[in-house]
Length: 438
Length: 170
Image (cartoon, rainbow over all chains, first blue to last red; front, side):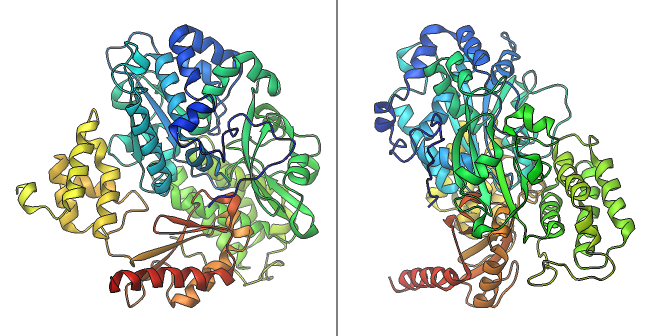
């Protein structure tokens, strides 16, 4: 079972009910649950959207788009039904925050979904979980059934004239389905390939109707924003980055875990104080700040780095999904780069050629390189390939593969050079790894 | 064919299917989860499963195959009764996932996508399973096991072997 951790610097908003049995609906209500939706029903959709805008809450899936603004893009009048779609296809390596939300606080996802539905004038929401999360899907299914039994979902929610239905959905193994348009394709019973944009989902989305797609953590945050007020939530974080978020600290730290910290929290402190420092007293070599697709940062780059979308962006990387992966000085960056690109090669849906071919070539080059058969020209080729994938695909998976690769090659060129001309990997424990995933 | 008389699904699965297709604005939305639920019961997506799913949703078998081949959890030949899925992605790799994976290979005598001769175990190296902060982690069917070392491998295998024997003796 996932272990819960705690640190004095944490500000528990989204995680405040973790470990308290809030998967039980009565417990959730006892802990203040389903109060926010009642407030929203009393105040109406425009008020909800204004509170969300004031909160500066930005999408926790990785793109960081302001949630209130996203909701406001949905046309008020629509011939086709509107939908709310919750993305729980959590698959970005380094990310396991939604795992804990579904496990400990499933009703916050339901409550947030109803609020989003009310805000945009939708009568149906979908909560999509990755197929591997079966035990969490069962928890969500029970929570949804309990909410129906209480009259919180259905034709007349909370005794009002408002209707809202929720359907839970299982995926079947695909990182790409975490991309919003591929998610809609999967939900329509198709291969999870991206759609070309525009039109954007807010106008033409699921079944052709206007659709809002929010990450599970974003939606679980919504009831808290309503309860505490948008301005108060914004006050916790840094400018233009409202509130807290769940940071997953993994890799070579003493105390890995999911910690809830204010936006803008210093990354160095996050590793050394919250995460307990680098494991075994070793030195920090690098850190991936926001899931495997975000470019790597060096120790000197994190000294004064606040973890919010804008500051990490300015430092040349991305806050992404908040998955902080810590790498110690005994790690081979070429191997790390190879494992990263192997993932994207495996997950590329094959729809766009630069991504399908690019990830494959990068994996081949890095495999050869790590095995000691690289040439100096390969380093430039890897860079050339990655640069030419950027911005040339329908969805961000191509970029997600190219960006970290460019980071590794640019920042660790010397280490790539140390692998040249048949030299064995300086860090090899087992020799070159044979990757069996094809 | 009449689904009622020819069904290879158990009454439970058939009922689940019927309820599921009616829930959505579009019947086809049930396809991806239904393929997974059918696989859970039957073990893999046999030709008969594909045909029945196609029939129940009202699309062609080719359509079903086209979708099914996209998703990495869906398979077209049987796995072991307990499918051991070892994550070796970055967070797990940094904390020794390859050592854990090697130990599983050694103990089971099979490699990636192999099945033991008694059919009890199969092994797979998989991508991130969303347990990065409790790495290295694996899934056996849908159960998570985390914070592993090579030393924890024999115990996990024994646990499932006993479970299997318990079921056979029951």
